[in-house]
Length: 128
Picture 1 (cartoon, rainbow, N blue to C red):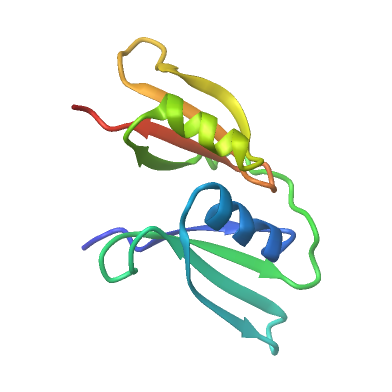
Picture 2: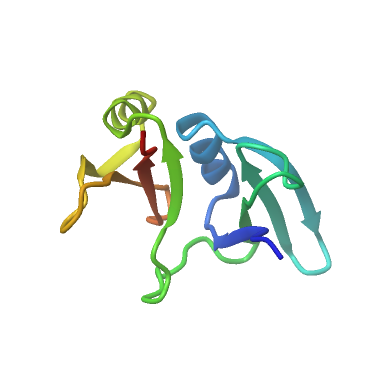
């Protein structure tokens, strides 16, 4: 077994795709409209889905916004240098909501950014 994807419901699909591709550097892996169901699915990731997990962005055509759920935490992305990643994300127009630094009660360097719908993306600095 392996993890395939994490699904997020988004209010503006093009805005979300732009965030994950232009701000976080992922690629749009696939996108498909389902007219009978009035929704679109788009998958973004760093590598093909056959190689690693992706994020599924679900856009229900008749819903422009969602309340963030209490149970969902975040999507995590490994980076070489969390400090530099924050600078680069900010320079591309992204919103850093927790600057890079050691995690509370630990030494792993993390940061958090927020996507256009308010979902948190954790940046975890690769351990040497």
